[in-house]
Length: 319
Image (cartoon, rainbow, N blue to C red; front, side, top):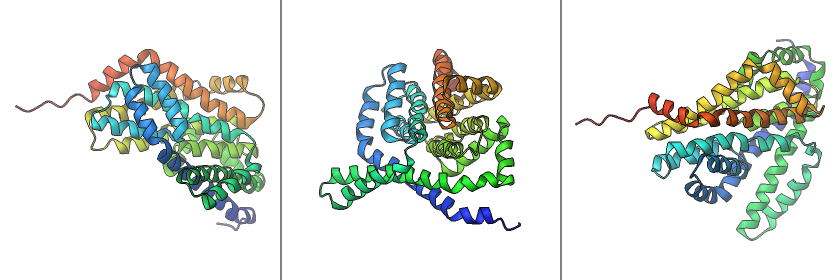
């Protein structure tokens, strides 16, 4: 491989920014789970009486924990414990897909250059505060600032890639929906976070390194890649837990197939509903796809429930 001065000059900041970003998003999610998971668990047990309430709960719980995977895995834990059934879990899974879009809307805002403010405040609270609650709030602010500081490093590090013909060719290849979706799915499978994948797409878009079709295609792939956590979580679980994992996969797979089938129309709709800011268009596309997925599935919830029960039937007890 020939020496590429551009690549080697940006690599330290690029890798550092990526590690900062991924570490922050994981740490923030874990800290929020520690802070709010008990409340979320109580609400999941209490407010799953109907599909609409379950969807709303899934949205709010995912925003609170900053992780759709965490919400769905908590749901699977309840199913395995017998505290929740598959039918009530369906709404939570659907709502979690909408809730996870909140982070992409925040990332699309141009606030990375102010990341040092929550970092400084959070560090001081965490370092100096005596109470456990204040220290925890300090950590949340610190990780929130680190997340955006990581994006700030990424934004500045990738700017020279505009001059790289190889990188430009790769980004242009992703304009093909299937190639873009495969790339987004693979990246999400590796880093285990669809929010992080969409965040990186928005970062590339801010530097005009990726076009909207490529970003939307990769976003569709990221939605499928995030199913891996759920499928791993249901291994060895109850039949209802396995059904929930299968439903999560189907709930992502069918809308992604439709999105790829009508990809040009979907891209045009995103442009029509958004401003000319491509970062905002990607974030809005993420929301639009998730909302349309829920609306698409809602009329068929009972049919999907019967279908999943058909392919994962009850165990026949041996007499």
